[in-house]
Length: 259
Image (cartoon, rainbow, N blue to C red; front, side, top):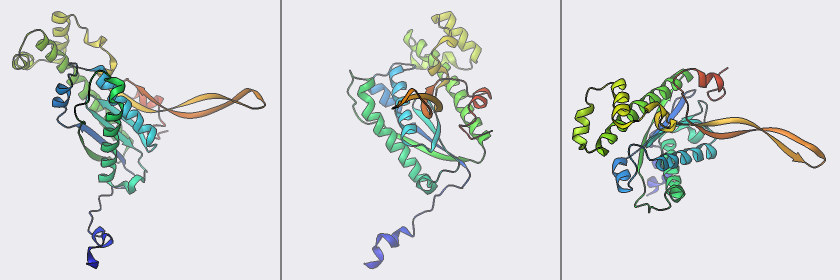
């Protein structure tokens, strides 16, 4: 009976601590989200309210956990970049993943009515995820660029697909119609058949969402000081910009602690 104590069992727990001096990416994805979006009648190919709900949950993550330095999201997925020297949860992969999934899911349920006041949440969303380590900041930039490229490719295809379906084609017919088409072909299809200029669609749809901290200056009034005192603080901001090239990272070197 004495050997069944938790202290004894704990010795046999797997040590899933991530290697030191590595950036940690926790990526969560909606599980069976096609079914979830159909049940709640999300607009196709993009539901702006649904995307904004995902974004506000991710913003809350950065506000709650300072060790997360950047987040990138599109559709039903979000990637959270944890500081390379973080000791949060002793760098245990399973606990970091569990934390991100559970907190994000809780926020999604709590914030639902802010974006869908006219719809009842029929059941909680489900997210699964994975944890990956990258030893260099350049690899993080490459990873995020890959996710943004994937966002563009998927959104361009989905925009064409759902416009074809809305025009009367079956989903199978729409798939066959788009088979083998290149990016230029899809842009031409949208413009010629549906009068849609793909490059003019909202940036959130085409580029995804970036969340990070930005230094802002505030003037704080204090007793005895008529002009106030200027203070600097970090503010969590949400944007939809290119992160494929170097420009964003040159303008924000502090995010990945680069000179």
